[in-house]
Length: 379
Image (cartoon, rainbow, N blue to C red):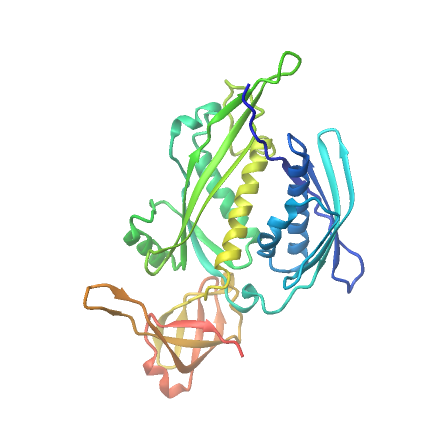
Protein backbone atom coordinates (compact mmCIF):
# COMPACT_ATOMS: atom_id res chain seq x y z
CA UNK A 1 0.00 0.00 0.00
CA UNK A 2 1.44 3.35 -1.05
CA UNK A 3 0.61 6.36 1.10
CA UNK A 4 0.52 9.79 -0.49
CA UNK A 5 0.34 13.17 1.20
CA UNK A 6 -2.87 14.98 0.35
CA UNK A 7 -3.31 18.73 0.49
CA UNK A 8 -6.78 19.64 1.81
CA UNK A 9 -9.27 21.54 -0.24
CA UNK A 10 -10.06 25.04 0.87
CA UNK A 11 -13.27 27.00 0.64
CA UNK A 12 -13.64 30.35 2.38
CA UNK A 13 -16.68 32.36 3.27
CA UNK A 14 -16.88 35.63 1.34
CA UNK A 15 -18.56 37.33 4.32
CA UNK A 16 -15.89 39.58 5.79
CA UNK A 17 -17.13 41.57 8.74
CA UNK A 18 -15.28 44.64 10.02
CA UNK A 19 -15.92 44.74 13.77
CA UNK A 20 -16.54 48.48 13.62
CA UNK A 21 -16.71 51.01 10.81
CA UNK A 22 -13.29 52.47 11.65
CA UNK A 23 -11.51 49.44 13.10
CA UNK A 24 -8.77 47.54 11.31
CA UNK A 25 -10.03 44.16 12.55
CA UNK A 26 -11.75 41.79 10.11
CA UNK A 27 -13.57 38.62 11.11
CA UNK A 28 -13.36 35.85 8.51
CA UNK A 29 -14.50 32.24 8.36
CA UNK A 30 -12.59 29.64 6.36
CA UNK A 31 -13.59 26.04 5.72
CA UNK A 32 -11.32 23.25 4.50
CA UNK A 33 -11.79 19.57 3.78
CA UNK A 34 -9.73 17.35 6.05
CA UNK A 35 -8.03 14.58 4.10
CA UNK A 36 -4.99 13.15 5.88
CA UNK A 37 -3.52 16.07 7.80
CA UNK A 38 -5.65 18.16 10.16
CA UNK A 39 -2.80 20.62 10.66
CA UNK A 40 -2.51 21.10 6.91
CA UNK A 41 -6.27 21.58 6.65
CA UNK A 42 -6.09 24.21 9.38
CA UNK A 43 -3.18 25.98 7.66
CA UNK A 44 -4.95 26.14 4.29
CA UNK A 45 -8.20 27.42 5.79
CA UNK A 46 -6.22 30.03 7.72
CA UNK A 47 -4.38 31.13 4.56
CA UNK A 48 -7.58 31.47 2.60
CA UNK A 49 -9.34 33.45 5.33
CA UNK A 50 -6.41 35.88 5.59
CA UNK A 51 -6.32 36.26 1.81
CA UNK A 52 -10.00 37.24 1.72
CA UNK A 53 -9.43 39.75 4.51
CA UNK A 54 -6.50 41.33 2.66
CA UNK A 55 -8.54 41.71 -0.52
CA UNK A 56 -11.49 43.18 1.34
CA UNK A 57 -9.36 45.72 3.22
CA UNK A 58 -7.40 46.85 0.16
CA UNK A 59 -4.10 45.83 1.73
CA UNK A 60 -1.20 44.29 -0.18
CA UNK A 61 -2.11 40.65 -0.93
CA UNK A 62 1.61 39.85 -1.26
CA UNK A 63 1.72 40.13 2.52
CA UNK A 64 0.28 36.62 2.72
CA UNK A 65 3.36 35.19 1.01
CA UNK A 66 5.51 36.88 3.65
CA UNK A 67 3.75 35.40 6.68
CA UNK A 68 2.78 32.03 5.16
CA UNK A 69 5.74 30.10 6.69
CA UNK A 70 4.63 31.14 10.20
CA UNK A 71 1.12 29.78 9.73
CA UNK A 72 2.41 26.20 9.80
CA UNK A 73 2.73 26.52 13.57
CA UNK A 74 -0.55 25.71 15.33
CA UNK A 75 -1.33 28.70 17.54
CA UNK A 76 -4.34 30.74 18.57
CA UNK A 77 -2.56 34.08 18.26
CA UNK A 78 -0.02 35.31 15.69
CA UNK A 79 1.65 38.72 15.97
CA UNK A 80 3.79 40.41 13.32
CA UNK A 81 5.76 43.64 13.01
CA UNK A 82 6.77 45.60 9.95
CA UNK A 83 3.84 44.31 7.91
CA UNK A 84 0.30 45.40 7.12
CA UNK A 85 -0.91 42.31 8.97
CA UNK A 86 -0.35 43.04 12.66
CA UNK A 87 -2.19 40.24 14.42
CA UNK A 88 -4.24 37.12 13.70
CA UNK A 89 -6.47 35.57 16.34
CA UNK A 90 -8.09 32.17 15.88
CA UNK A 91 -11.36 32.54 17.77
CA UNK A 92 -13.11 29.30 16.85
CA UNK A 93 -12.21 25.94 15.31
CA UNK A 94 -14.77 23.27 14.52
CA UNK A 95 -14.56 19.93 12.77
CA UNK A 96 -17.67 18.23 11.47
CA UNK A 97 -17.06 15.09 9.52
CA UNK A 98 -14.62 15.86 6.72
CA UNK A 99 -14.92 19.64 7.10
CA UNK A 100 -12.86 21.94 9.33
CA UNK A 101 -14.27 25.38 10.04
CA UNK A 102 -11.94 28.14 11.21
CA UNK A 103 -13.01 31.62 12.30
CA UNK A 104 -10.30 34.24 12.71
CA UNK A 105 -9.91 37.94 13.38
CA UNK A 106 -7.24 39.72 11.36
CA UNK A 107 -5.78 43.07 12.39
CA UNK A 108 -4.82 44.91 9.18
CA UNK A 109 -3.38 48.38 8.68
CA UNK A 110 -3.22 49.10 4.92
CA UNK A 111 -0.41 51.52 4.09
CA UNK A 112 -0.33 54.13 1.36
CA UNK A 113 3.23 53.34 0.30
CA UNK A 114 2.60 49.84 -1.06
CA UNK A 115 4.18 49.45 -4.50
CA UNK A 116 0.89 48.70 -6.26
CA UNK A 117 -0.55 51.99 -5.00
CA UNK A 118 2.35 54.10 -6.27
CA UNK A 119 2.79 52.54 -9.70
CA UNK A 120 0.71 51.68 -12.72
CA UNK A 121 -0.12 48.05 -13.36
CA UNK A 122 2.42 46.05 -15.33
CA UNK A 123 1.27 44.48 -18.60
CA UNK A 124 1.55 40.68 -18.60
CA UNK A 125 1.10 38.23 -21.48
CA UNK A 126 0.58 34.52 -20.82
CA UNK A 127 1.56 31.61 -23.01
CA UNK A 128 -0.28 28.31 -23.07
CA UNK A 129 0.67 25.73 -20.43
CA UNK A 130 1.72 22.57 -22.30
CA UNK A 131 1.51 19.11 -20.74
CA UNK A 132 5.08 17.86 -21.10
CA UNK A 133 4.07 14.17 -20.94
CA UNK A 134 0.68 13.79 -22.69
CA UNK A 135 0.34 10.23 -21.38
CA UNK A 136 -0.21 11.72 -17.92
CA UNK A 137 -3.45 13.25 -19.22
CA UNK A 138 -4.87 9.90 -20.35
CA UNK A 139 -6.70 9.38 -17.04
CA UNK A 140 -9.96 11.24 -17.60
CA UNK A 141 -8.88 12.32 -21.09
CA UNK A 142 -7.87 15.75 -19.77
CA UNK A 143 -5.60 16.63 -22.69
CA UNK A 144 -6.96 20.22 -22.76
CA UNK A 145 -6.23 20.84 -19.10
CA UNK A 146 -3.21 23.01 -19.98
CA UNK A 147 -5.37 25.37 -22.02
CA UNK A 148 -8.02 25.57 -19.31
CA UNK A 149 -5.46 26.14 -16.56
CA UNK A 150 -4.03 29.03 -18.59
CA UNK A 151 -7.51 30.59 -18.80
CA UNK A 152 -7.96 30.03 -15.05
CA UNK A 153 -4.69 31.84 -14.36
CA UNK A 154 -5.72 34.67 -16.69
CA UNK A 155 -8.98 35.13 -14.78
CA UNK A 156 -7.12 34.96 -11.47
CA UNK A 157 -4.96 37.91 -12.53
CA UNK A 158 -7.88 39.81 -14.09
CA UNK A 159 -10.00 39.65 -10.94
CA UNK A 160 -7.46 39.67 -8.12
CA UNK A 161 -4.08 41.07 -9.22
CA UNK A 162 -3.05 44.40 -7.72
CA UNK A 163 0.13 45.02 -9.74
CA UNK A 164 -0.56 43.32 -13.09
CA UNK A 165 -2.98 43.46 -15.98
CA UNK A 166 -3.17 40.50 -18.38
CA UNK A 167 -3.00 41.63 -22.00
CA UNK A 168 -3.95 38.29 -23.48
CA UNK A 169 -2.81 34.71 -24.08
CA UNK A 170 -0.39 34.48 -26.97
CA UNK A 171 -0.72 31.62 -29.49
CA UNK A 172 3.05 31.62 -29.95
CA UNK A 173 5.33 29.33 -28.00
CA UNK A 174 7.46 31.30 -25.56
CA UNK A 175 10.42 29.90 -23.69
CA UNK A 176 13.62 31.16 -22.04
CA UNK A 177 15.59 29.56 -24.89
CA UNK A 178 13.92 31.85 -27.44
CA UNK A 179 14.28 35.40 -26.08
CA UNK A 180 13.79 36.88 -29.57
CA UNK A 181 10.26 35.44 -29.73
CA UNK A 182 9.50 36.80 -26.26
CA UNK A 183 10.59 40.33 -27.17
CA UNK A 184 8.61 40.19 -30.44
CA UNK A 185 5.41 39.20 -28.63
CA UNK A 186 6.00 41.85 -25.98
CA UNK A 187 6.46 44.52 -28.65
CA UNK A 188 3.27 43.47 -30.46
CA UNK A 189 1.17 43.46 -27.29
CA UNK A 190 2.83 46.27 -25.35
CA UNK A 191 3.42 43.94 -22.40
CA UNK A 192 6.20 44.51 -19.89
CA UNK A 193 6.44 40.85 -18.85
CA UNK A 194 5.67 37.44 -20.34
CA UNK A 195 4.82 34.31 -18.38
CA UNK A 196 5.58 30.89 -19.86
CA UNK A 197 4.66 27.68 -18.07
CA UNK A 198 4.62 23.93 -18.52
CA UNK A 199 2.86 21.11 -16.67
CA UNK A 200 5.46 18.49 -15.82
CA UNK A 201 3.45 15.94 -13.83
CA UNK A 202 -0.18 14.81 -13.77
CA UNK A 203 0.49 11.21 -12.81
CA UNK A 204 -1.90 9.28 -10.57
CA UNK A 205 -1.40 6.86 -7.68
CA UNK A 206 -3.89 4.52 -6.07
CA UNK A 207 -4.12 4.08 -2.30
CA UNK A 208 -5.49 0.76 -1.07
CA UNK A 209 -7.06 1.47 2.35
CA UNK A 210 -7.96 -2.18 2.98
CA UNK A 211 -10.96 -4.44 2.69
CA UNK A 212 -13.56 -2.21 4.32
CA UNK A 213 -12.93 0.98 2.37
CA UNK A 214 -12.93 1.87 -1.28
CA UNK A 215 -9.57 2.51 -2.87
CA UNK A 216 -8.79 6.12 -3.66
CA UNK A 217 -7.05 7.65 -6.66
CA UNK A 218 -4.77 10.61 -5.97
CA UNK A 219 -3.31 12.78 -8.70
CA UNK A 220 -0.27 15.03 -8.86
CA UNK A 221 -0.06 18.49 -10.34
CA UNK A 222 3.43 19.83 -10.91
CA UNK A 223 4.27 22.83 -13.08
CA UNK A 224 7.04 25.33 -13.66
CA UNK A 225 6.86 28.98 -14.67
CA UNK A 226 9.32 31.45 -16.20
CA UNK A 227 8.64 35.19 -16.22
CA UNK A 228 10.59 37.08 -18.88
CA UNK A 229 11.31 40.75 -19.38
CA UNK A 230 9.61 42.02 -22.52
CA UNK A 231 12.54 44.22 -23.54
CA UNK A 232 15.39 41.74 -23.25
CA UNK A 233 13.75 38.32 -23.08
CA UNK A 234 15.75 37.73 -19.90
CA UNK A 235 14.22 35.45 -17.25
CA UNK A 236 13.60 37.52 -14.12
CA UNK A 237 11.61 35.01 -12.06
CA UNK A 238 11.28 31.23 -11.96
CA UNK A 239 9.41 28.84 -9.71
CA UNK A 240 8.16 25.26 -9.46
CA UNK A 241 4.83 24.27 -7.91
CA UNK A 242 3.69 20.82 -6.82
CA UNK A 243 0.56 19.58 -5.06
CA UNK A 244 -1.63 16.50 -4.92
CA UNK A 245 -5.35 15.89 -4.43
CA UNK A 246 -7.96 13.18 -4.68
CA UNK A 247 -9.22 12.34 -8.18
CA UNK A 248 -12.90 11.48 -7.57
CA UNK A 249 -13.89 10.55 -11.12
CA UNK A 250 -14.29 7.05 -12.50
CA UNK A 251 -11.16 5.74 -14.17
CA UNK A 252 -12.79 5.17 -17.54
CA UNK A 253 -14.79 8.41 -17.62
CA UNK A 254 -13.96 11.42 -19.80
CA UNK A 255 -13.71 14.57 -17.72
CA UNK A 256 -14.47 17.99 -19.18
CA UNK A 257 -12.04 20.44 -17.57
CA UNK A 258 -14.22 23.39 -18.54
CA UNK A 259 -17.12 22.40 -16.27
CA UNK A 260 -17.98 23.38 -12.71
CA UNK A 261 -18.07 19.67 -11.87
CA UNK A 262 -14.34 19.51 -12.47
CA UNK A 263 -13.34 22.82 -10.86
CA UNK A 264 -15.34 22.13 -7.68
CA UNK A 265 -13.79 18.68 -7.32
CA UNK A 266 -10.83 18.16 -4.93
CA UNK A 267 -8.42 18.23 -7.88
CA UNK A 268 -9.98 21.34 -9.40
CA UNK A 269 -9.91 23.16 -6.06
CA UNK A 270 -6.24 22.27 -5.69
CA UNK A 271 -5.47 23.60 -9.19
CA UNK A 272 -7.18 26.89 -8.28
CA UNK A 273 -5.03 27.13 -5.17
CA UNK A 274 -1.88 26.61 -7.26
CA UNK A 275 -2.94 29.41 -9.63
CA UNK A 276 -3.49 31.73 -6.67
CA UNK A 277 -0.03 30.90 -5.32
CA UNK A 278 1.45 31.91 -8.70
CA UNK A 279 -0.35 35.24 -8.42
CA UNK A 280 0.86 35.80 -4.85
CA UNK A 281 4.45 34.96 -5.73
CA UNK A 282 4.50 37.41 -8.64
CA UNK A 283 2.96 40.11 -6.47
CA UNK A 284 5.57 39.43 -3.79
CA UNK A 285 8.59 39.35 -6.12
CA UNK A 286 7.77 41.76 -8.98
CA UNK A 287 5.30 44.34 -7.65
CA UNK A 288 8.03 46.79 -6.66
CA UNK A 289 9.80 46.70 -10.02
CA UNK A 290 9.22 49.93 -11.93
CA UNK A 291 6.35 50.01 -14.41
CA UNK A 292 7.71 51.29 -17.72
CA UNK A 293 5.17 52.71 -20.19
CA UNK A 294 6.70 54.08 -23.41
CA UNK A 295 6.17 57.11 -25.56
CA UNK A 296 4.64 55.69 -28.75
CA UNK A 297 3.99 58.95 -30.60
CA UNK A 298 5.03 62.58 -30.26
CA UNK A 299 3.99 65.70 -32.16
CA UNK A 300 5.37 68.93 -30.77
CA UNK A 301 4.31 69.22 -27.14
CA UNK A 302 1.68 66.48 -27.39
CA UNK A 303 2.17 62.73 -27.43
CA UNK A 304 0.83 59.34 -26.49
CA UNK A 305 1.98 56.51 -24.19
CA UNK A 306 1.08 52.81 -24.27
CA UNK A 307 -0.62 52.71 -20.85
CA UNK A 308 -4.23 53.53 -20.20
CA UNK A 309 -7.25 52.87 -18.03
CA UNK A 310 -6.54 49.16 -17.54
CA UNK A 311 -3.11 50.04 -16.16
CA UNK A 312 -4.53 52.56 -13.68
CA UNK A 313 -3.71 55.76 -15.58
CA UNK A 314 -5.98 58.67 -14.66
CA UNK A 315 -6.66 62.09 -16.13
CA UNK A 316 -4.31 64.67 -14.67
CA UNK A 317 -1.57 62.24 -13.66
CA UNK A 318 1.93 63.74 -13.74
CA UNK A 319 4.68 61.67 -15.35
CA UNK A 320 8.46 61.74 -15.26
CA UNK A 321 10.35 61.15 -18.52
CA UNK A 322 13.40 58.90 -19.02
CA UNK A 323 15.41 59.19 -22.24
CA UNK A 324 16.42 55.92 -23.90
CA UNK A 325 20.22 55.92 -24.00
CA UNK A 326 20.74 52.23 -24.77
CA UNK A 327 23.81 51.25 -26.75
CA UNK A 328 25.68 48.25 -28.16
CA UNK A 329 29.04 47.57 -26.52
CA UNK A 330 32.27 46.42 -28.19
CA UNK A 331 31.20 42.78 -27.86
CA UNK A 332 27.90 43.35 -29.67
CA UNK A 333 25.81 43.13 -26.50
CA UNK A 334 22.91 45.56 -26.21
CA UNK A 335 23.14 47.54 -22.97
CA UNK A 336 19.94 49.11 -21.68
CA UNK A 337 20.35 52.54 -20.17
CA UNK A 338 17.87 55.30 -19.32
CA UNK A 339 18.57 58.83 -18.12
CA UNK A 340 16.02 60.89 -16.24
CA UNK A 341 14.99 64.11 -17.95
CA UNK A 342 13.85 67.42 -16.49
CA UNK A 343 10.80 67.19 -18.74
CA UNK A 344 7.48 66.39 -17.09
CA UNK A 345 4.26 65.24 -18.71
CA UNK A 346 0.60 65.45 -17.81
CA UNK A 347 -2.11 63.03 -18.85
CA UNK A 348 -4.81 64.88 -20.78
CA UNK A 349 -6.93 62.00 -22.09
CA UNK A 350 -7.18 58.32 -21.11
CA UNK A 351 -8.16 55.42 -23.38
CA UNK A 352 -8.42 51.70 -22.65
CA UNK A 353 -4.72 50.88 -23.12
CA UNK A 354 -3.13 54.21 -24.08
CA UNK A 355 -3.18 57.85 -22.99
CA UNK A 356 -2.52 61.27 -24.46
CA UNK A 357 0.00 63.53 -22.73
CA UNK A 358 1.17 67.16 -22.78
CA UNK A 359 4.90 67.97 -22.49
CA UNK A 360 6.24 70.65 -20.14
CA UNK A 361 8.17 72.87 -20.71
CA UNK A 362 6.65 73.15 -24.19
CA UNK A 363 9.93 74.19 -25.83
CA UNK A 364 11.52 70.87 -24.83
CA UNK A 365 8.95 68.76 -26.66
CA UNK A 366 11.35 68.27 -29.57
CA UNK A 367 13.74 66.33 -27.33
CA UNK A 368 11.15 63.66 -26.52
CA UNK A 369 11.70 60.55 -28.63
CA UNK A 370 9.55 57.52 -29.39
CA UNK A 371 10.73 54.73 -27.09
CA UNK A 372 11.46 57.02 -24.13
CA UNK A 373 10.02 55.70 -20.87
CA UNK A 374 7.68 57.40 -18.44
CA UNK A 375 7.02 56.69 -14.77
CA UNK A 376 4.32 57.87 -12.44
CA UNK A 377 5.60 61.03 -10.80
CA UNK A 378 5.97 60.73 -7.02
CA UNK A 379 7.04 63.40 -4.59
